[in-house]
Amino acid sequence: MIDVRCICAIGQRGQLGLNGHLPWEGNTDPLFVEDVTRFFALTMGHVLIAGPKTVASVPEFAFKDRTIDVIRSHEDPEQVLKRYPGRRIFVGGGIAVWNVYAPYIQHWDVTRLPYDGEADRWFDPAWLVGGPLRTP
Image (cartoon, rainbow, N blue to C red; front, side, top):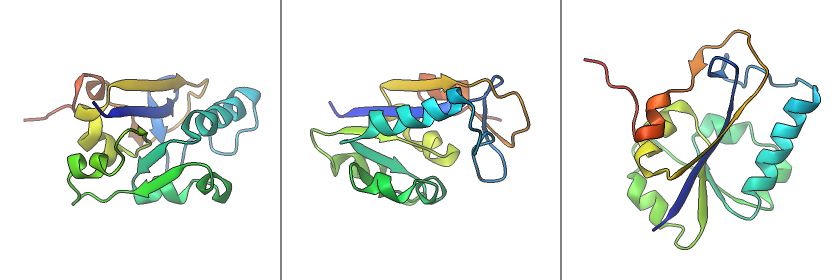
């Protein structure tokens, strides 16, 4: 079985994004800095797959010690995952990516940060059971 995991941080009410960025981006509070450090430590040496916007936000230094794959909506998730046999794969987002990859993720690593401000993107708890909420 392929080891597929999600890694993300959310605000107090499930906030994920604001205007194409993390809502707390640039916050120097130790809890936020610790979360970013933890993200890079956990994904080091492994595969990180994410959409173009998420990958664009990854600092240059991170490209040297992990495999980063920009995935596109037209790609078959099973084919993408088969590219990395025997490797741990982290699905880093964004929302469109988690909507597609949720059924393949066995482990969700979600950090809840002390952010309670604005957002325009939200964590969908339905991902935890294998897919996005479906609306009629």
